Image (cartoon, rainbow, N blue to C red; front, side, top):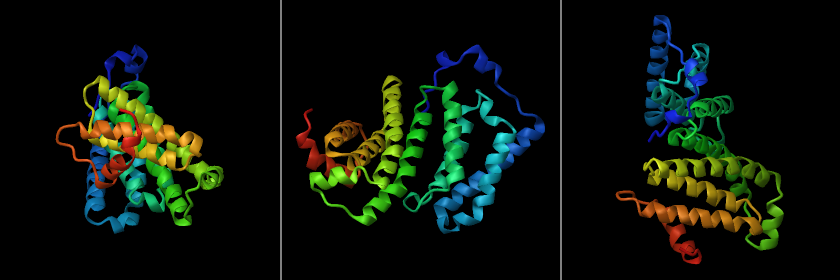
Length: 252
């Protein structure tokens, strides 16, 4: 789903392209092998995640040491490495994240974005990073419970947990919006991207004051409407119910 454009790469960026030595390539191959095993563990034995912390952190250090993310000619490999580590850092987002790894992933996405400002996968990776970081705050808000009156919603919007959630959700909404625009321009829009964008907007609406929440809910509905128009994509039950319940209140 990559849409990076060479039009935005200056000659200065091209000069930063690096070529790994034979030893560097061997180190990179070792990092990749370890991350393949890490990904396999996440799929098959996720409870073992803690045993792999040193492996993940060693991979980060190795990638930084070889300055691999500065090579503008190996984007797909870079995206794959960051995505594996990001999936690991948010293996249970409701319970929290592995902070140093998730922050490394965010910084790495931003590093790639400098050379590929319209790349859909990078923008989505950043949106996912901020969205998943917010999940811990949203889970705590859910455990505390809430009432639905406007006065209570206004009061809740100023609570520390709601403020923290919004602090992370607003960048998620912004990056997903950029990803959707870039995907539209490159004719690569997917239901997965639109669903993630809708989720971020819905969550931001849920932790905002009533006066500002509506705009986020409206945007979520519009994303979901576009999602159901994509051939072959099936909207999840929760999103479909949301669209059925609230879509009728939003003008087409």
